Image (cartoon, rainbow, N blue to C red; front, side, top):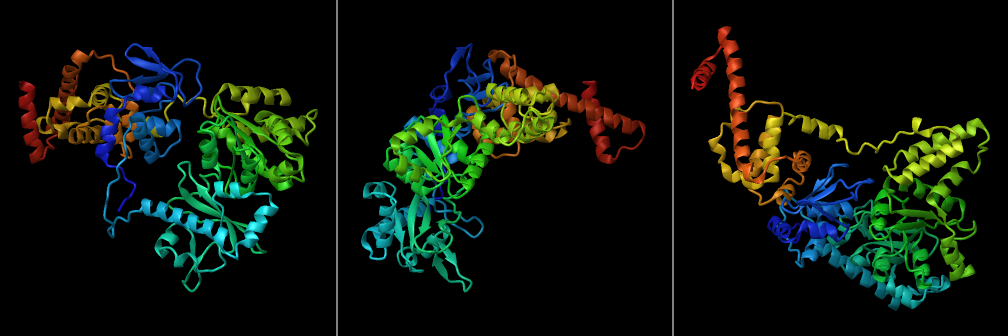
Length: 580
């Protein structure tokens, strides 16, 4: 059964085949600097390059924000991909096909058959399309589409369909267990399964790879709710997906801007009119995940919601969600429609040219933000100026450090006539400092000798060839953080990774992943031809230091005549070692 899991052997082969310099250079410009390549970090704002890529180690590290990793980690961070997506993209870059392991289900480890889920979703979508075209009951759905000005070409492009009013229609066509897993069957109080979509116009929701992952349905009578989505499933998470993205990317690989609207039909009507770069949220407020997804493909987002009170509230919520993802190079604008219109009605009444003109006139994020906050304030009053600082605080503090943030603070200072930096903390300015969790882990390894040894091994894992585990008295080691040290050391001894990139991949999800990633980016001034001797010397000195520490502890107990029999033997052996 296909589980979507990728064999580790393939991942290691992939990391050996690709050159991280080529991968990263395809996304940001790199410049040669000594043995490394450097650039301004794509993950935080900076004026001078602190982002370094090492070809020998197949590893990147930023000395500013401390992000680091291999080629897979870069794609996950840069393009906001999950692990499977990053491996798949890297495989495409390398010209390889991604295999999947076949693992039998058992009682203790239930596997998800993603291939079967995607297959059944395609079948269901085709079934709904066929019902719209061929059944008598679907005529009212066809009539509704015509009343909204949707032609057959647009309906086909978006795979529009119809769900019959029959409660058991889908179970007659598809396996019940799969229908439940993809969120299309509910369960009655009596325990009987029933179709969630009944007598509804159906909108398949496709991911960027054209796979159907969910459905939206609009009721055609007086039922409630008016719009309904398929429930959350292994394929579908509505807070992370938008409707129409596949269709946008099919027309524009890199759209200049993406319009964010509220409804399915807004997207379809706009596309039919040639404004084919609109997406819609799926009945939820705009989230950070939505925004990161859209910004992967375009540098500009334009919010275009209904002109009524609810639409304006939705616009403000969307704006407040965007602050934490705003970076240099990203733009956001807000397009305010007249109160009686939504995008669909405005386009039909005023025409495409007028609609495009309205897009061009859309307010910049900063203008909209301060307009919204000051619309009902008299800034000649001290209380109003206090109010705008207080209202801005929670949003501006979310922003990553950037020139844009600095200018937003300057604008707020101009309006409030107060030094706002005194009141608004730059919570992300000190990105170069590790978090408390990072500090705790790294402090555990703060002694230079053990830390240097571990850094050498992480950055040059082939050093494991220098010794076997049983050649060294690991149990005697005694320093703060020794558990972390030994955990990483034994992991490397057992797995023997070829290079740092593969080592980092092996530690993905491991308890010491953060420490390993941080130490992989530490620079040591050790010539390559002296590395092996330095490493062996460090290990030997650590053990020698541990023996001295243990001898001193036992000596104190010996003087107090409190040694037990085991300690007496240890003291005897260590005394001989000292005499030597």
